[in-house]
Amino acid sequence: MASPIQNTQRPETASCGLVVIARDTTDSIITRISSQRDLLGAIQTARCVLRLKAEAIRAEVHHREHPTSDYPRKPLALLSRDDLGAGQTR
Image 1: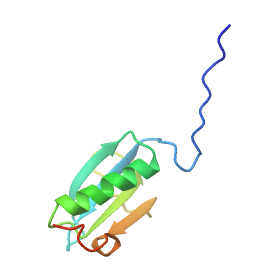
Image 2 (image 1 turned 180 degrees about the horizontal axis):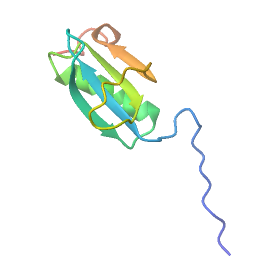
Image 3 (image 1 turned 90 degrees about the vertical axis):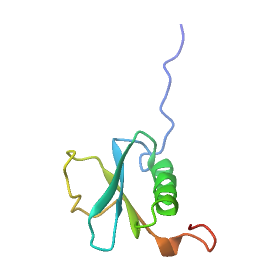
Image 4 (image 1 turned 45 degrees about the vertical axis):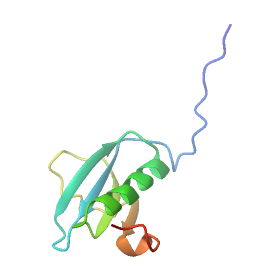
């Protein structure tokens, strides 16, 4: 009999419906990407968004809410342009 597959992800990195959003200087959401990745993968997506979207000043990772949410709660992770190393922005 085959044994069941065990989930070996750590709870803090397990995906439970994450979303990456990018905000501009007016604090408006300019990008919203649903992520099925774990928290570390969603943070990598946030870095990519900051590199690719010139108007984005910060990217946040949140638990997914309804599609029109403004995501007012504290994010699980927050990155700004300052968090990217020199030469990683456009």
